[in-house]
Length: 63
Image 1 (cartoon, helix red, strand yellow):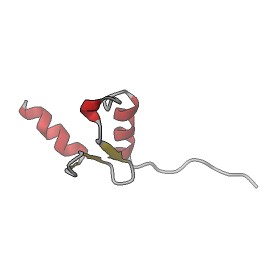
Image 2 (cartoon, rainbow, N blue to C red):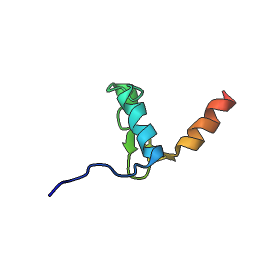
Image 3 (cartoon, rainbow, N blue to C red):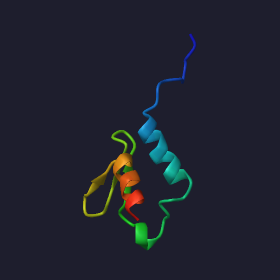
Image 4 (tube, rainbow, N blue to C red):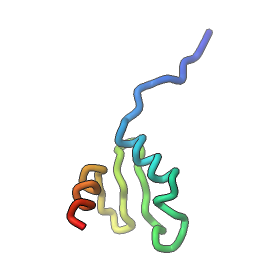
């Protein structure tokens, strides 16, 4: 019996994991309470606001 660990990943969730892995969500008081939900591919603020990657990209263009 052999097992295969290959499966299609959610590209948006994968990008959020990379953001977290690259240190964009540091473990300090300013980011306390922020979460990434890999299954839904969203960033959640401490107040419960939800942001999708496309919304964050659009906000970046404004600044």
